[in-house]
Image (cartoon, rainbow over all chains, first blue to last red; front, side, top):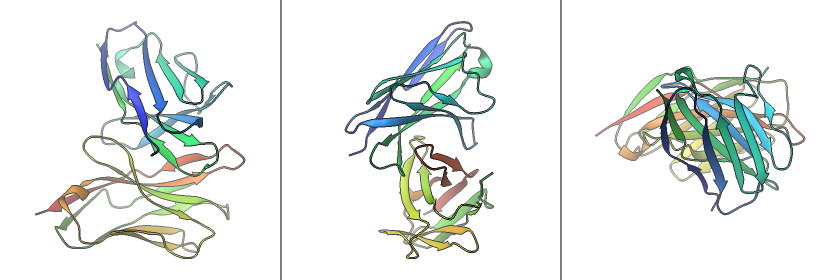
Length: 116
Length: 116
């Protein structure tokens, strides 16, 4: 149980375009989802917390207008990188937490974004 | 602010031997959770073990066990009978916050190599 999927697994796009990444909890309802960014050989950096039906909470230094997060249902959150630039190239990972089990987060397999 | 420190960027162990990965953290809270996550080359984050701070008994999951020293704010991971599949990045994480605002804070990770 507790499976989280992400789509796509990798994406290449041109500079200036927007890219949407989906995060789904497959066998549980996730009241809260998290979006992380991971640079090569580094740790995970929390970008934002997404709560179903409400606005996302962004970490300090993360541009909310550039990284749009939508959590429209209990099983789906999306991250849209708007007007992507090469410096946005990174590995993006989502995680999900069940409502009744607040401690443990289950992670998706990640999405590798390359902006040319 | 809570911080998590993993002082060993890299560790190596012979197959079938035991290895211990170190983690210390800083917090003023009395109730919290600690986790070890494994990230193999596939980059999928996998929960290895978790510890609730109010429990004195050290958590154990098969070959994985922790040495939780609350007063010293230490949370080390012991891997017994190491297997080639244990090779990965290992991240120690602290769950901070309360009332639905829980967020994971990760250490910088330890790269574990298992030698045949």
